Length: 386
Image (tube, rainbow, N blue to C red):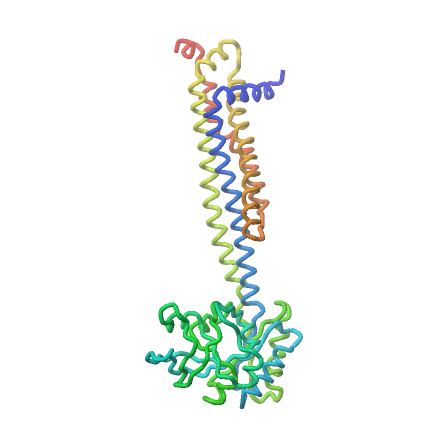
């Protein structure tokens, strides 16, 4: 007879004789390894999402600044059209800073707020999403209508009760509010500003104090080429001395975030694996103590110390292998189901799956070594007398 196979047979019988304890121990192992796999999978997913966010928000954006001369609204709209029409530009336009002007909903006392002049393509480049209302229509832009968009944070401060002001007084001049900007991907200061089209801005206040060209390239690979072209597109004469700048490279920040997440995951995984081993070791030790008389009789019948130790190690190993495999499988199923429900793009860290499986293969027998030594050292006479 094969002593190893016999040991596993004995281990299965021992586990089935105490089903409640075996189930509780298995649950502990499943939770330890399952939560480890789930946490590493969610961490890998978070890392991928963070890297994608860095690519989306930073890698493709280009800002052109300098002494750009835009004498009137038509010149601004023409320049913005050339920028937005570049084949490498996904969206682009012009943002001008008119300055801080008194703004109030009638008849409140005015407060000083930032007023920006924007083209439609600039709103796209900033990733502006409206909370309510609409954008400027082409007719309003072409006719120089006095309309405005309000950043959501400013709108909340100007709101009277639950009513959104339909009109604003900007520098004492009425503007019709057509929408609220609820969120932007870039330049969060827009949420605290009033946005107006070029026509009324130039008519009332002249050329903006500062004019920036903002654009988003179709892909990160095209960003450098777009940055080289945009100054000449905005100022074909080259006299304005425009300079294009891409946002700082976020790759190092992404590496730092990855490292922090990995450190946290490592600490968590060590704790979970230690907890699982402790559960198995404790359960196996209790089993060995309860079966002290049984092991004494086996020794009296001629079982060697090695055979007794193999039975205990096999019991711990069998329970850990089965429970660990179930825990890993359930963890993958759970995170896949949650990810599908929330439309996440899951990134399964197969290294953690392999590590959890390997830990189950090694940790179970290791957890049983201490109880196995204790069980194999039982004196047959003393055990029978108890």
